[in-house]
Amino acid sequence: MSLIRRLWGTITLFFYFHYELIVSSVRVAWDVLTPHNYARPGFVVMPLDAKTDGELMLTANLISLTPGTLSVDLNEDRSELLVHSMFGGDDPEAEIAAMKHGIERRVLRATR
Image (cartoon, rainbow, N blue to C red; front, side, top):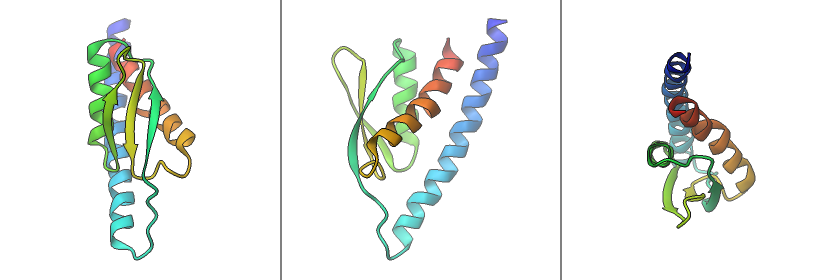
């Protein structure tokens, strides 16, 4: 049963990441191509539930691969990830919630 659950988690992670890739690409392109500047860049500190090297690496890399976000640093006790977000300056809590309940949650489903 665990294998089936992890396989399903991997499939949902794959499709969720590609959905986020398209949505964020359009959002960044729209910001670049229109005269109005919607970007409010800022750094956000995301608390992590991921603990293993694989979970941390996958979470940080998928965040960095999504246009408009970049994983910058992992603190020493590996409990928080510093992320630069192109649109995170206005509402950092919403940005953190979107990453935690989006990428990180699906990474944990695929790896645990």
